[in-house]
Image: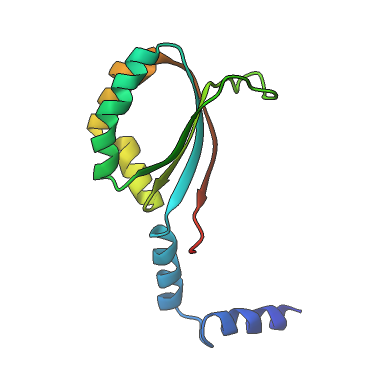
Length: 133
């Protein structure tokens, strides 16, 4: 059984196992776009709107795209700590781009100054790689 798995792995790597093929696989995964599904409970819509306006160029600078944003009037089912009234899906060009964004000084400043006072709860449901189309 183990030799069959090795043969399948060898075939997938073009017949050879090398650190080069492992490195190229890791690089391809690092460059794969990722999406994040997030819900927030907005308490101060005016302050949150200012945050979103000022956040747009920061997202653009990191190659991020807001795929959708939905206002939620009624949640039919959720866990106690998953209160939200806005749902959005963001796409970054890679996991490393998403990480750089989350550590960016301008983003952190906007978050502290406008996001934190306007949002009472944030729920991160998923971050996943986007398969090629």
